[in-house]
Image (cartoon, rainbow, N blue to C red):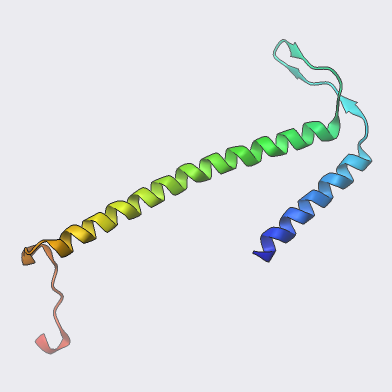
Length: 98
């Protein structure tokens, strides 16, 4: 918990230092589109936030798959406990059987 807070505060500090040291503007070009001059820190913050949003989306997809597999396994366990078929349950030998 504290490690995440330290990392976030360190990144915020680095962005502040970057903004102070780079007050000049830059113009963006993309295919045939051209922007007005924008402060460099705005470009950096927007790029950073876009990366954060993409990572959140990818992590949500990964966690959704993870929780779906957990739910499927829980349902399978519930079905096995509910059924009276003993042949579906794997019985392991005891040490006394050898």
